[in-house]
Length: 278
Image (cartoon, rainbow, N blue to C red; front, side, top):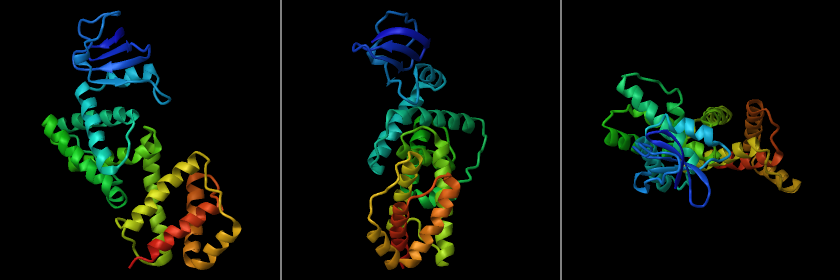
């Protein structure tokens, strides 16, 4: 790769042999390097390509603030979590996770504690992601010798959940998580019982809600079933359908968009399955 611009000792704007312009990072990568020089490939730890979420200026601004070793650590954490969660994490996830790791380490070194109000919700709604996040915290402690709080697993788990949206805007995941908790409150009120949010059927329901959330925000709701099918579901599961209608009202209120009858039918099926559990 040919050097186009040196941002600092660790971050360089470069042109690959293919002609693609990228941002390369690595400890000491830009030290005593000038425009037109060839980069030492042995020092390159990460290569970031501009995309719809980050242009070159944004990439450069982020990367000059994050130590290269934290970028490498974030990439390793995502690779490990990818296997256990069976989720593909794109490059766009590396920077926000590395940024969080850097800030968490800084806070830990300064003995600044922070509370995570979604801890209980994450514990109940995303047990697999939380387990992977706890492994990530252990890895960070081992690599940096900084004793992060156990609670740091909560925001890291939300980063894993956020991968379903293919975006680094964590606020959407926080909104989604709060909404899921409210959905379960509606279910428990309707059935006058609690639900095991770690059961297989609850996991299926939460997965359905995640992708429902994506469909709604991208205006791609399900509209595919004939009225006869809709009527059959209403007749077969009247209480679940009534509950799903209540969930629909909540979702419409929180999302500001009308929910299709097909989406309500699929919610009904998941509610009925949950309600059938002992």
